[in-house]
Length: 255
Image 1 (cartoon, rainbow, N blue to C red):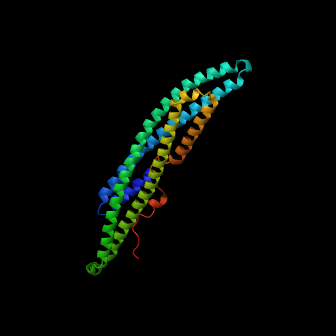
Image 2: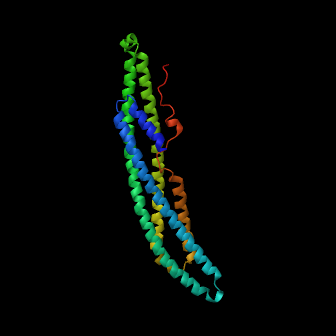
Image 3: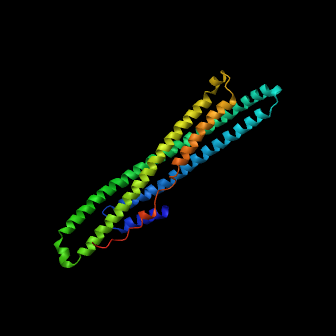
């Protein structure tokens, strides 16, 4: 993906666009920031997966302990599981706090990407106006007909148009990916906050004699929502691209 984007940047620099240097620099900065953001998102994903694995393992352990106990000592096993449960939730709560810090960093990186894309969009709009103006001026350039340079000038304007359209298409795709990931990260953050609140408030629930299995089942359901949302929105580890984005960068023949 990054190679294709770099091809697009090369095409911008090789064009006769009025803002080619600024646009190429903006795209280069976006690619660099995207790489850093992708690493942050991968770190969030890895930490959430580790948290899910830890809770799954503890849940399986608690169930085996309870199911394997004799009726005579079932109460002692339940008390032991409850004590283990309390200690485990302290650890899980600490893990979530670490994930929230990393997720906050990833959110800031995504915000920075949106700023980069806004700059690219502004440059695309300016270039679009400049290209339209150049094309309109060319229609009235009688001297170019006399000198026989009309075809070359028209081809140059068409090339600028194609490059600009490809840049804007890439920007639109990237903006959609960033927006979807921001939304997913917000949902994950809300679910993690709810989960951590449940862990921190477990003491008030214990007075009602709620079994450990019920606590863990609720925690697992929340974590499953986090995992599904992370898988759904975590595909923006690199800038989006596709063959069509850089497949039409050669000057078009005059019509």
